[in-house]
Image 1 (spheres, rainbow, N blue to C red):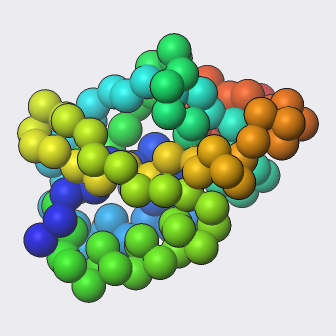
Image 2: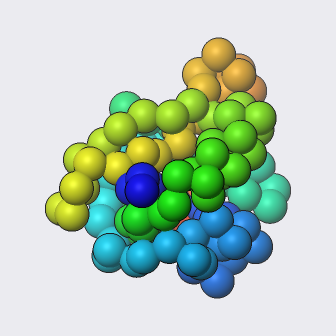
Length: 116
């Protein structure tokens, strides 16, 4: 079993929640970063100053592999963070793919899904 923290389309009720739906919901927490909209999903860059709500789940190893394949393929990187429940994997935007120049052309958002 693995514990993951999600902030975007993997959250309950959103279009990629197939990855967390079968997991065990541990609760919500917050993390710091800067979030940008990529259209149908966000990218969270670490080392930002804004607080974002995350959902924390325990999932099977197989589901973890599927989610990781999807996230790494989309230009995210895996990192372990502390949550009130236990350490969890979160997928931040890879700064080699999401450069400052690229982020400058994206809309910053305060939450996901964004309030328009």
